Length: 451
Length: 176
Image (cartoon, rainbow over all chains, first blue to last red; front, top):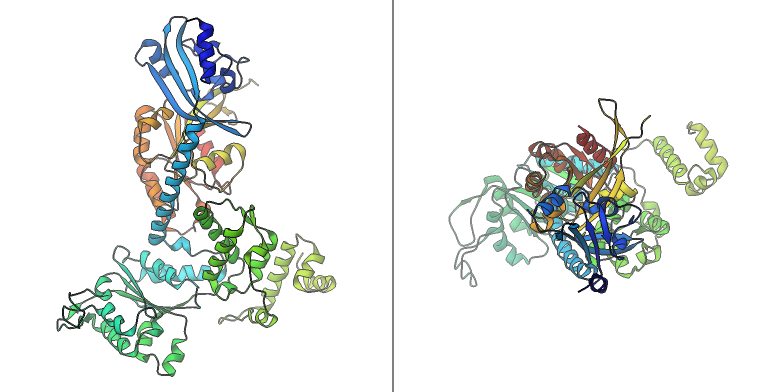
């Protein structure tokens, strides 16, 4: 078969071809070669034209000496002005002295795209699994935000984690992340290699809760056909997290206190005392002191739990952290929904900051998830957040003096600086943001020596 | 002054999937970032010419880095090893937020060295923007790099932190 026919076949099969000398000089090539070799024929060294060949001098020597017959680089990606192509590049030992090395490239774009889809799916699943496992074990980074309350919380959590024996009481509104904080404390403590056992006291009927916590022996009650270990035993050496502790019935409160003090307990239907050691973390969104006053919660248990108490800040007190957490959820739901939402429009950001978040982080998560479902564009818009407008009265309630007090002048200075920053130094806009006239703002800037 | 001699150096980016190899190359070469995750299949070569360096004998040389952004490696495979052939160095990349991505690096380094004896390495502890300064992994990374016997940088392809320094450090090692 003549050379022309070979060339015709190669062109039909979309194979680029070049004949190389041992030092990598291109001696001849077919017309398709210039598609993969950007600077050919201006340049004639193969590694100048096909950069993927750079560094393969030893491979080419092995081909010339016959030590190797073929060398392949599979799925080499080339970007031709935004159009992605994949090639298999081959270096082959040539049969004639005039062509000791043959370079050829096969277009593998279709095969690559199919393979890429599978790889993408596999990696996304693995990624989610690894992130979930990581979160479980190293949750410190899950406490997102840079605001003062969050920095303080992180600091406290680290301190509490270092002391593994004391009971901890987590207080905070619903949705502030008490479960997350309990996990962080456990997995950052010396108990991390032991179990973290959690139970929501409000989620289990009173009649079952005792058996769940303490376990039972066979025959302890009608349906106890086998003995069962309770959660206290499961948590041995580790951490027991009792969520919604205020809902724990009074009778069980007494039993729990006894376990905490004696570090022993008995399964239902058993006389045998069992030793158990665990850290108790309890959480509630209710005012336990008030419940004690009303006789709904045992005073002695309250004081036993209240050795270390930690109040989790509501989202409305976390300032711009709302945006950090919202962005985190955007990334999570991008992965989950296979979307490419890049961020929030300026109006959406303002709306997120202005909203009072009665449902806290849980509500924020739901809000972003819902918005991500309905967003088709690159940015989440304000309308897609579906936030309820604030009532004036609620707006007023957002500002509260912290227990430690504050320096009003310092707050005013900070707010003025923040407004100027947001308005990029434009005093009229900054004054609008603060609800002041331009003159009043100027007066206050002079008073506080703000340039 | 003489024109510096342009020397091509093949550098591979090694590491598990989704650690940010592609993003590091894109930040370094094109100064862009996109947090949409698209798995790399096979390999893609990008080039960047580094600033000239004066050697002890007064001569100038300049590296043209051929940066091989390679599909995530969970283990060393024949399919992937051809990409490593003829390399002068490698950037080992891990994701600071995912400890799973650290495990593969020691084996990868050994296998890479077998193919390229004398290769130079640097470790990119990437995605530092996603974790706090006191995160346990930040505290562990020094020991990890010491065990691997390579220098490390806390990098962020997202905000560009230490990306330039990472590649500059590797270039300096290559010129030694």
